[in-house]
Every structure is written in C-alpha cells, then in structure tokens.
Amino acid sequence: MKLSILMPVYNEEERIADALKQALAVDYPCEIELVVVDDGSRDGTGEILGRADDARLRVITHQRNSGKGAAIKTAVDSAEGDYMVILDADLEYDPQDIPKLLDPVLDGRATVVYGNRTFGSHSAYSFWYVMGNKGVTTAANVLFNSYIGDLETCFKLMPVALYRSLAVRSRGFGMEAEVTGKLLRRKIRPYEVPISYRARGREEGKKITWKDGVEAIWILGRERARRRPTAPTR
Image (cartoon, rainbow, N blue to C red):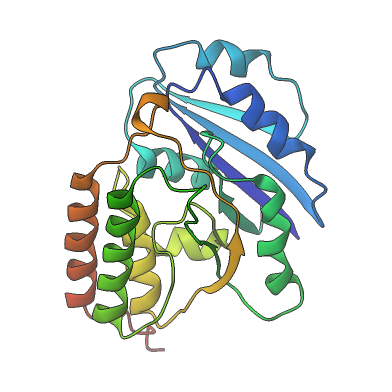
C-alpha cells in the first residue's frame, strides 16, 4: 500500500520547514509520498518549499489563495497513493500519530479512520473553540444518527478513490463537514483512534473562525437533505 500525505499550506513560513521535517521523519509501515500544495502564500513559504529536497516530496503551487478545500482537491487529483491522509502544516498535529491511523486499515478492521482529539487543557487554546467543535460534531451525530467524536479533525484517512468519489465542492474549511456528511450519508462510519493535539492561538496564525462553524452546520444539513446515492442499475 502507498499512502499519500496531503499538506495544504498558506503563509506558514515560520513552521513549514519543521512540518516537512517532522512528516518525513516518521517510520511509516508503508511507502509514502508527501504532496504539498502552496495555496497562494504571500510570505516566504514558497521559497522554503523550493529549497526542500526529498524524493518523496512533491510541491504544487496555486497562484491565488483558494482555501483548504481547493488545496486538498488539487492534492487529491495529483495523488499517486492508494490511501490518503490530510496533514496541516501548522504543527498542531503530530505526524507520529499517522501510523496509528494506518493500523486499523492494515489489519482489515477499517477503511476510513479519523484521529480523535481529546482536547485536554494543554491542547485547546479557548473554551469557545472546543465548544464550537463539539457543537458541529453533535449536529452531525443528530442529523445522521451516528456517534463520532471529532468531525473537524484534520486527520482523515481513507482510500484516494473514495475521496475522489465524494466530489467535495467546499473550497474552504467547510470541506471537513462536507466530507463527513457525505461519508455518513453513505452509511460509512469512520473508525476513530485517539491522537495528540496542540492548538495554536490567533496570535500564532490560527485561521478558522466561528463563521466556519456556522457554515459547517449548514453544509451538514444540506448533505442530510440529499438522497443517499444509489448503485447504478445494469
């Protein structure tokens, strides 16, 4: 199996070098590629990526900032792996946890795996951030009669072909809700494993806001209202 690690990047010159180093230093149980999409960065991110040298690394550049969902779509379209996982470049997530996500897939227990953040006092920068995440996750559980613990997690691991089949349209952070809503509508329940997490604050470049939470709930409602896809007749 080959794993495509997809990294959307926007204005992360202070962290991108460490993010690449950490992602490529992990002892993965399978072959990997790291596909980085520079989503129109206006700082020194592009120059740092241009100096990176590793055979497993590929860099794609957007001329204009288009949003996380758009960056992931570009990365998925270019991915050569069998499975994919998203890894943000902000150092909030530890790539050492990725093998934990792979374990249930490699031993046949799961096809889709989410990394579940526990939000301890050391890992959440604000009360309202955690409550917003829990609110969006609860909305998904109610709408789809499911029980997942962390909808907004970056760590979503699944077959590349499955992600492509979801035809995700959201160009921004709404892609997190859209992906989960479409999976749940297909009766695909993610297998969850606990992961470590360290949230950064606004002063460190945190980009997601309460507006993204409102959009996420709207997207979940939209996906719930749609009919479940049916298999084509022969």
